[in-house]
Length: 268
Image (tube, rainbow, N blue to C red; front, side, top):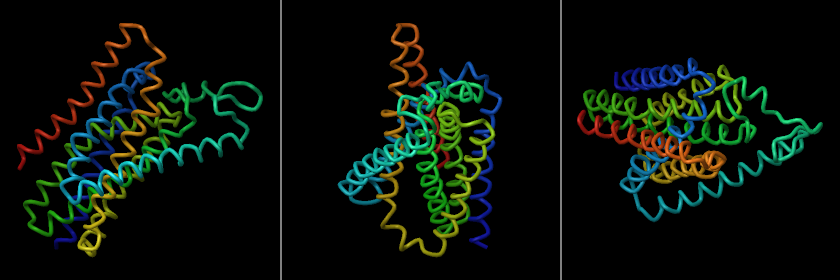
């Protein structure tokens, strides 16, 4: 019965998160520029207000901090690998095809800028999949304590995931993915919640020691994508009006995570 609850809660949480991301399907392409700023805030807010504190609470803070540094290095090397692969497919790192023409038009039609040829999108999918997997483990741990605690935890996780999933979807669009492909990747990534829930039910004690390390890698992916891939794009518009708008939207992204945390505290 407990396993059934875990699977049902994991599926429900994934469906609600994907539906929230699906709302971005109706975004106008002109809004993507502005929403990237919101996505940066949501990523940084989730990393510093939620993921990193949990990583420190779950185990040795030094181990968690080391895993964050290790994760940043891994994502740096992963992006280098993606750059190398892209250059061998007939593109240069500056975003031009072998014939000298940029590949921006198709990406713009998809609602993204395509300036990184999918690199930040690929990184955020990896990080989000790990995050969803850990959410499944947390849901399993709660249901193993009591059904009521499990339901409350699942609701709290959904409340936290909604702003982040919308932000992730915007990042995929900004990275050049089509709306359909971005939505499908969100669906596949959400499936990791069920996998984490089932594995957590059977081998929770074994996985518990790895939680701070995995959380550190999740935080590293959020920080790296926000700081290394997205923020430099904002500096292309240095005028005062754009800067004020970007700052406000980043603040709103952080505020949405803080609000979700406050709602979670209210549930408990």
